[in-house]
Length: 141
Ligand code: RTP
Ligand code: MG
Image: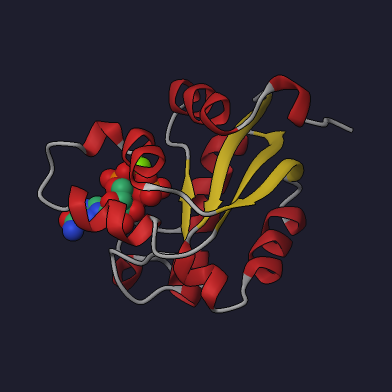
């Protein structure tokens, strides 16, 4: 498996819990490198555009409301099989179904406020990274 990049977001609930460092530490311990990072307060347009694939879903309004409720930390993670590796570290969308030891099991309580986002495919990763970062903001080692 080749080196990949994926987009990670530490969501408002995890930022509010002061868990930024603990979550990034899990990525680093799994050999994912942070090659770009910034803290942002999303507005409705930016959050809605990011989750455009879910626009028609019943939870879309709540999702945008939650993602704009406080600051988030967006990062580009780079490493071997980064997309699947990050999804494994995150655990299932619903924290109640997330495997023990995953980020969502340890830091989240509800499906709405579930601590982290991670790209789900190479195509999503490419779109999502470009959605938040210019090429000059990504710093591979
Ligand atoms: P994410 O995109 O945030 O990484 O989460 P995911 O891939 O695990 O889940 P996805 O299906 O893409 O859903 C995006 C976010 O929408 C909320 N959601 N709520 N109430 C529901 O049935 C429901 N389903 C999804 C979650 O907060 C999920 O993270
Ligand atoms: Mg998703």
